[in-house]
Length: 162
Ligand code: S3P
Image (cartoon, rainbow, N blue to C red):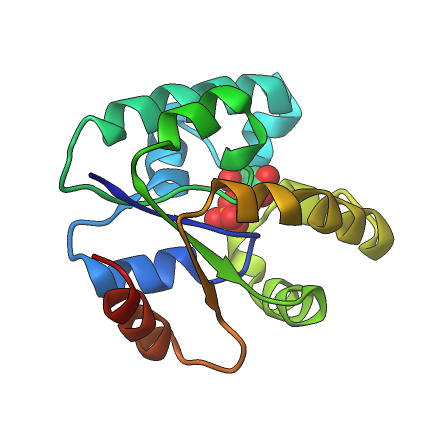
């Protein structure tokens, strides 16, 4: 059973994932490599649906490894196909409120997230709102990130998972 960290942009999926495994599959990093350009450029050139197809193909490949620890992008839960692929795996939702996430993302300019760059705060909040029920539904475990450090989040995952 693979372990997959889900949650909105800025929730700490990659940082926490690296604490859980020194062989983390960071899907955004792998996609940048595979697509040969930053995700922001791929969105602009090929469009979001093409990105989502690439994301699904990679997710399916990675889930074939039962030992995998995977940090997908925050939008991975959008596709019913992906949600079906995730069923039966340990899916951990890192939950955090919108304002905290927005602050974190605003400070993390390096990641160049197209949905953040191309939307107003209101529109970005609407994307956040539209996904919350989907994250909860897809998750087998929800961890409240709150003020926890990444180490504390990793610890909470290990304490609560099997
Ligand atoms: C996305 C999240 C990003 C990246 C892309 C789309 C999303 O990953 O995959 O910009 O739709 O939530 P992070 O969650 O790692 O920022």
